[in-house]
Image 1 (cartoon, rainbow, N blue to C red):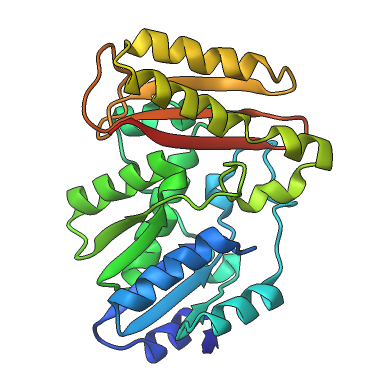
Image 2 (tube, rainbow, N blue to C red; image 1 turned 90 degrees about the horizontal axis):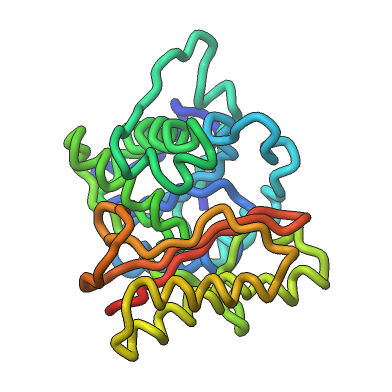
Length: 276
């Protein structure tokens, strides 16, 4: 695996075509490696980036304490058969005088994470657009765990005409259902035992939907599960359209349950298709 840190080195190391790309912020786990495995199956050349993007962190968020371990990540990627790792510094990604931002407008960025974390998706769209232009992949891989982010990136690619296929990969979970996340490392043992409540709430909504009951009944079931863990402060729990993310009053195929909130040590998000 070749490791490069500058744009010049990156351009020299990339092939002209056949690149599958996995952008990450590092501190890799099995969810990231599932993206790499999918990319490895579908592309002759796999590139991964590791960059903790300051533009997507708001004031008071965890940019400076976000977990980082490049040596560990590099070993995992080498073992997974990655061809190229791009690990730039902030100055390389955003040179002095960098003044451009990419903004996807509308409900995809105004609701849910966009409301709780103003400016977050502008930071995401800006860094992903820049990475796409630098790497020039044919396919790029993102986890469905960050479902809203996945839709925002697809919309950006569609609107701006990036020649890249955005591939969503199913969420990888622990045995108790907790979605894998780099931020799970923040959780104390006591909180970790309760953190699967997000998945339990989503599963309860899916169960109610499977019985043919209403969206309102499903939401009540999910809310009841969350109330059982008072340490979790809910930011939102909703059932939304799988393409627009607008809240639903009646079921549509593929309806998505989404949930986010805070434990004392960390903020967690999750989602699940609740009406297949």
